Amino acid sequence: MATVTFYEKPGCSGNLRQKLLLAASGHTVQARDLNAEAWSADRLLAFLGNLEIGEWFNRSAPLVKSGEIVPDNLGFEQALHLLLDNPLLIRRPLMEIIRGTATERCVGFDPVIVDAWIGLNHVGFPVGDVQSCARGSNGRISGLSPAHAASDGDGAEEANHGRCGAH
Figure 1 (tube, one colour):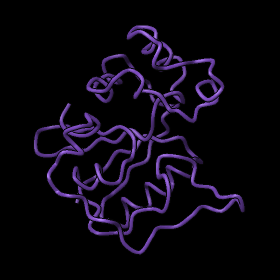
Figure 2 (figure 1 turned 90 degrees about the horizontal axis):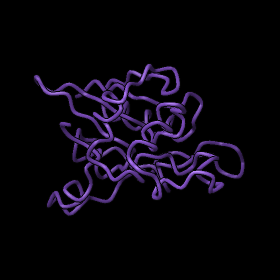
Figure 3 (figure 1 turned 90 degrees about the vertical axis):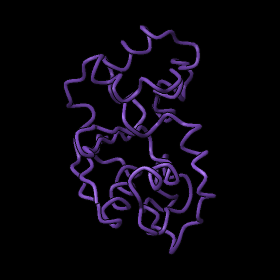
Figure 4 (figure 1 turned 180 degrees about the vertical axis):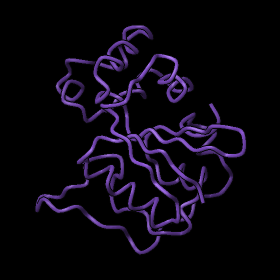
């Protein structure tokens, strides 16, 4: 099992569900406050560099949801400066593992991609969108389903997304 450095927004219910899923799968999770990290451009780009600029952003951030920031309309430098100035705009979680001598990173939490990357060991995938807020209308965090659907196993999903792997 992997030791996962997990950059999160403390108190985020979606990140809590993601950490619980990783721990239930046997991984050790070392949570870090995304906002408290001393991000440099190089360090942040080690996570984001293979993604389209629009995928760098947390689509649930108030400035993005309101339309004040439109990630798909930003240039490289402008987007990078916005994220460095306000880390809560960064798509989360950012995850990092050391495998042998290589550091591997993942952006966001697509259970199928994370399963292909480090394995979720047939632990039930969360019900609903695991990348969004997990609080229901009753204010409670929704749980995990008893089982998850298997992917087709051909690796196409991961190949189509530069979200995980050695960067």
